[in-house]
Image 1 (tube, rainbow, N blue to C red):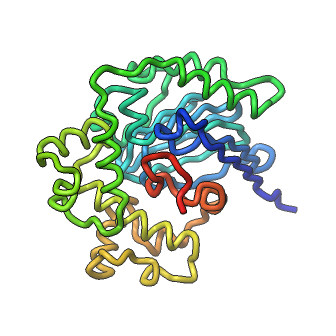
Image 2 (spheres, rainbow, N blue to C red):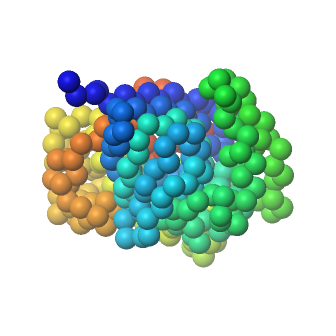
Length: 296
């Protein structure tokens, strides 16, 4: 008899004093069966720190070099699909909102866009190595591990000159479904286009134009993943001119056609998205509000 793949995920809201910096903290257990490994693909998202205590993933961002054997995996903000294969494991994930990147990583997000690296080896993430080495408890006590994460981030200093309010204002504009052009975004924020562009490169990783396109795409992809009965045409965001425009975006962001993506199994991602929608109100990071509050 075939072994049923086991995927268990628990999403933990960050404490109130940290909530505006993180999408969520989440602990996951994956068991594909003795000696087995399973594959899936992540959509574009904000930056993540992932700490593994079991099997380490083989992963590759579309069009970039693969990473294998790392138990501390860092992904920068992404506009590409991340393919991965993994066996039996337990891991914690920490999703950084753009404000969290600016607060805790400090380095320009644009220099780390679509990055997939071993956090033990990359200088931008050296400050998190001590968390990677001290996070897991022998007894697998989730509450104690969660507390270690919160305590660790509370100890990190705030960088000088961090303009939190501007980053939040840009983020609010990006997630607004009614926001369709960079000109509208600039008017709402009340800053020059150059200032907005610079802030986006520093904290978000991409230009305002690409951020709006990625957001439009992710609203559509999420609709389909949560309710495949809609078909792609029924899941399209209202700001798309036609299905051909969506297909072009799908190729750019996922490296495949919508039909190819729908035909592939998503044994991990489907569980993640449905549970995240239940707990957080948003099925994916890119739909989270910038204040860290649960989406309505």
